Length: 180
Image (tube, rainbow, N blue to C red; front, side, top):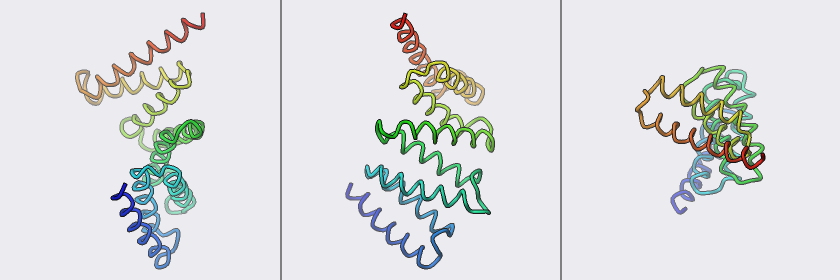
């Protein structure tokens, strides 16, 4: 945490300087916000990291030169979804909503593949925890197919998807059996 605190202090000082010199919505200032959120996350300060990330995303989306589908906005909304996912039970609903938005934007702009696949995978895991089996299965199945097409059936990443998909199907089966 000592290194994270030092990093936070340096980036906070840099951020203050950027605001004074460049303005709060300048691209350099916004990049500093994003980096500060990453350092806060690594230091375990998830609430503050989420606040930074939300502000950064809000500024990017409102910027007429950038907007919600700009690569920086896509990167930031994916980061926010990840932060919220690790933020505990009180963040799960927002994490799912933000992840769905991020996934939709990534699909529209980038199509399939990475990082779209990573978002689909994250959303699948969120839905699995909630017992929303059908949608989780569809997403995980899509991740598996995409990985097979991109990396091959014997690639480590593909085998990881196979294992996770098998676990999901087993959990879904056991849940459905217990309901019967």
